[in-house]
Length: 233
Length: 300
Image 1: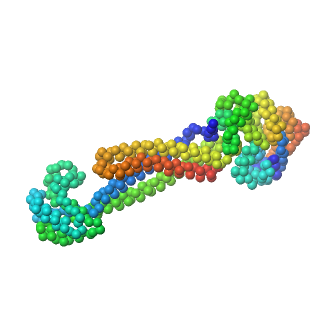
Image 2: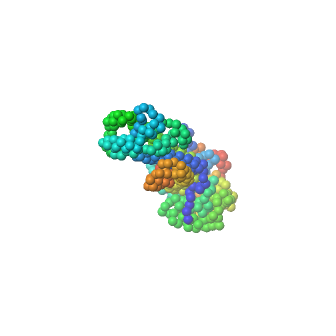
Image 3: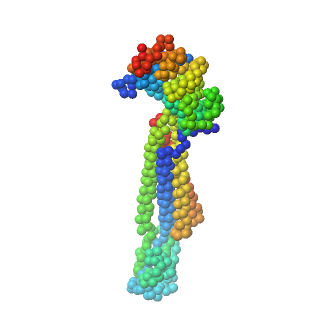
């Protein structure tokens, strides 16, 4: 589903923050992406959801080379990807209901049932009582739940979560991971960036470690939690 | 149900477009209709004066008004009129009475009758020429000279041509201003759309992220900017229409031409005053739409 082949990326040409990355996310897998702050986790995820373009190397998404994609083709692929951010990125002028309906609303073929599906999804996420509320009136955990529902309303093939639990409490974190696990069971490929070692221990999934611009992949069994501001073993 | 992907609030670029377009529509409407009316007034005068000359008869002795009156007896008048009417190029000749001559002089000398009476007024004949006939005044001048009169012929179109030239230049100026205002409107929209996109960059990024096509974002933004332009233009057009109707009403009560204009021309002018501002709204809204689409095509 996602393949990196010798992909490097840098905001400045001379200074690559990601170097020669090669890995693959197969269909239906669940990966954690970890590394110290500033290791390049967000940049890597941005390349996957096509907000950034690799400086060198080849990135393949859904069997298409990202370099060769036209803008409208990228849009079509983005509809197969759900993204959750640490800072939620909900639109403050829209209600909870409208925020969740947005991905369906912008797609003319799905506009007709956008609000109906959004309501169902919010009820499934136990947010049915907050349909008409605005995001800024909700707690961090509630906002993140709305953001997750918005990310999955399209039934994406790939779910990307960039530090989704950074601004929420433990109870909400467990709840989100329950949602992610549910989606994973339904066949969605999931990649979650986190530096929360407890999460890495609690959930038995493959781990991609970013350190000094390079990537190492480890299975959960081999993973030993370490302070993330120190190099991983 | 519907969903507004971008905030409804009137942000600075939208407000700026609204006011700028309003000002442009107001200025363009008043200027355009003003020149249109001026052009009509001049054309009306031209139609009235075309084929007309005024003949002035001055007694050779340089006599004063009293003397002229005495000389110009009814018999003399008839004799002179018969001579004038008999000239091949002349279709009609009417002797203007002294009261009529004084009335014609009033716009220049004022209504103070004492001043007018102090002037030696010539005998004046209003002459209508036959179409496509050139007047050869020499035989007429000679005969009248023999009878003791000096003939002066006033061709109105000669001095009126300066007004036409001025009007031509005015029309050119207004046409240039129209182009300039359209360019200013496009420029204002160009910069404000860029500011607007920068202002809503985050929302646009989220829209891209959730799979919104460029066409959708373009349509949404274009609609917002076009509506702002339309709103500003519509307000200005109502204001312009009111201004023009007010000016028209003043004309109707004060200026002779509007007062005496034929009904069809009056209807045309009233229609112009009401319609032109709204046509400008359409033009400016179209310019806004096209410019916005062009800017967004490049920016997204």
